[in-house]
Structure formats: C-alpha cells, structure tokens
Length: 388
View 1 (cartoon, rainbow, N blue to C red):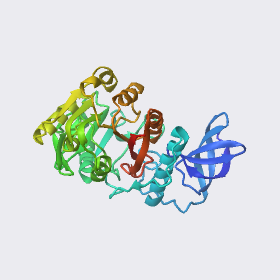
View 2 (cartoon, rainbow, N blue to C red):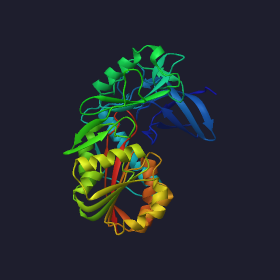
View 3 (tube, rainbow, N blue to C red):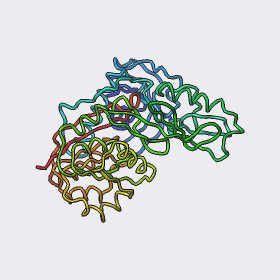
View 4 (spheres, rainbow, N blue to C red):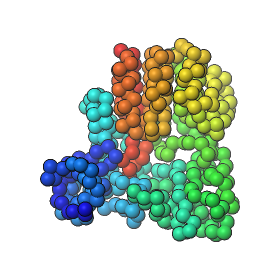
C-alpha cells in the first residue's frame, strides 16, 4: 500500500470525494477539487476501487483556493474549504443530481442551490467533543475518533466562538469526569449548552423566523444555519393550504407553526420528548389551537395512529440523515395526501425514498437545494411531490 499515482480529478461525488481513474481502477480522493492534477497516495483498496489522499498538487483546479482554517485536513468538520464558494454550490448541485439520477432515475437539469448569506460564521449549533485526558476540545479528526483540539472554529457564529473560548478556559477540575461531548446552540439572545456544568446552563432560547417565534434549547434539535431558514420555509410551504396537514419528524415545530396558519387542522409527530414539549409550547405561545403534537417513534405511530388523522391533504417530513423508515413511507402512501414535501439533509437517502414515493403514485413537481452547511459537502434538499 501507499502506492503513489498521478491523476486528474474528474468531478466531485456524493460524500464530497473527488473521482479519478488510473490503471483501470476507480479512485476516490479526499479534499480534492474538480480539475486538480495531483499525486495521490493509495491508502486503501477494495477490488477495483481505491481510496486515496493528495500528497502533491501538480496543477491546481481553477476552483481551488487556499483553505483559511489551520485545522483543515486534520479536523473532520469542513471538507470543502479547498473550493471557492461558487464551486461549492456547483458541486452540491452535482451531488444532488448524481443521487437522484443514479438512485431514483430522476433527472434535474435546472436544479438550483440557494447560497447561504454568510458562508463563514454561520453555524449556530454544534457538538464539541472532549478528550479530558489530552485536555482537547473540538471535533473528531478526519476518519478518526481522536479529538482535534480547536481554539477557533471559522464556521461558528461569534456567540458560539466566545462560548468555546470560555469552555476551553474552564478549569479541568470543574469538568464532570464523564463529560465526553457538549451540544451548544444560540438564539436571538444567549447560548444554551447540554449537559449543564460549572457556570454553563441548558437555558431555553427563543428565535423568530418568518414571523414565528420558537423556543428550544441545546437538548432539542434545531437547524444549524438560521440564515437560510426563511427561504427554506417559503419554498417548502409556499402556496399550500387545505383542511388537514401532517408534519412528520416535526422537532420543535419549525414547520408545524406555519402549517397551522395554512390548514384547518395540523398534527405533528416527533419521537424526542424534549422537542415535542417545546413544539407544544410554541403552538401555545402562538395561540394556534388547531394543531397538536404527538410524542411517538414515527415507525410505531404510523402503524397505529394514522387512522386518527385521515383524510390528509398535505404531508411534510423532515427525517434525520438516515431518511424515513420503510414503514413511514408506506404509511404516507396509505394516507394518499394530495401533496408531499420532503426535506432532507442527505441526497442519497432522499433519492432512495423518492423512488418509493414515485412508484407509489407521485411525481416530483419541484426541487431546490439550500446551502445549510457551507464549507462541507452536506446540503439540504427540499422536494415537492404531487399525485400523478
């Protein structure tokens, strides 16, 4: 192993790796840019597929820039810093197209990825890993569970960067011995951390988006890039209305509240009890009495509870990265809604699920990408489906 080969990067694939070919083999190259001519070290080989890393750049791609972060390449957090921002957006559009074509036989010639207003200092939620033996606080190193000690993170909003510095300056004697990671999030005013320790508390925060006010904390999921949310909500829910809507994986109610202003009756379903407590409070504070939130695993509720909500005009689902379970997709098809909106942070699992929905009698009416995660290969994708 550790063989060196010279290749040209052909394009960026799902997962963020560069594609190249040499000696009849397919190479996946990390931290590459389309058009790079590079010397690659083969780190791992599986049949005709090799995984490699760049040891020398012979000719830089026009897309390549100097990564500004001193931890680039070691920290596993940002794998697109070597690309200028226009190239990042183009690569993400290509990733979505690739997944849709390869996994769902859906072609997207006019796909748009909405840019983040702030490609840096945008991240309002993070998980920091702690290695107390090494006195390291930061993120996992690339392809490792070792903690990369990070003094300054270029994608954190200033409030979280300040909090990171405060945590780093806290005496080790004040850190709980069992503390392995910290979840942190910011809102309109203040920062919430979980778990609480020393002077750091899991405080409740508020945030106003599109005229709706949400409460939440570090114990409940909230989107990473708050600057993109208004456009995402507008695309996802623009023009929808009717008698009944269902919001699956509803979290703290990001979509539930605006849905309750468009439909006579709305039901949200979420497995995390902390999130549903906030969702109910958010509905109450907004005086929205036509919506309710159920705490239950989606795969369990869809088997037993969907009869209680029929008929349904509109279903929105925003599952975790693993996508929706088969039973959830089947349950949605059984409900036969007029429209479906699928919000996803993983184009591959999204395409997998879309194939089932299309086979079940729906067609893709519109698709849009949103750059929720600048400097990384991750991208948020929203798909609108209607009955055939």
